[in-house]
Length: 151
Image (cartoon, rainbow, N blue to C red; front, side, top):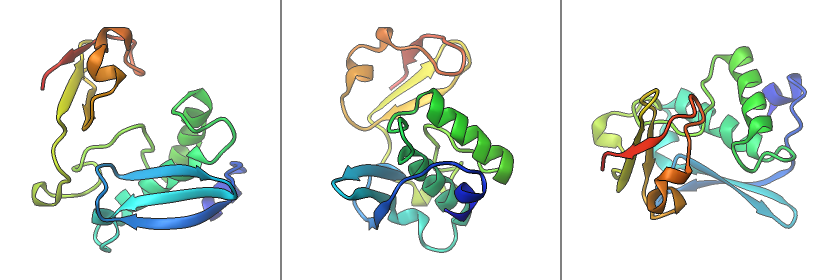
């Protein structure tokens, strides 16, 4: 939060920080009546994955900024500002390796995996969602390419 203050990024009131032992994702930001709750995957808080934890916390704190509950243009702008100031790669999705976890520590593998036909970006999903059902309706955020399902 001190870094975001220094960068004048307008994050909002976080009333709870939770360690989630059943998480299927690295973190989650949920709006509450009096602020926000940020949950973090327990695999990141063991003291050995400090960079992965910080990246996740920055990612979720940016979701508390006005108009940033998605990964839209404003969220990406703030993420880029944080990256320039800290070197942390704040992006929409990270692999376990990018978080510093070994294969043994990984959370369960994704049920659905897509690859961008343009730049090779990999997207992983654990649940059936619009992307899984209708992938032809989506474009890559990096290169605007289409996706092919590889799993």
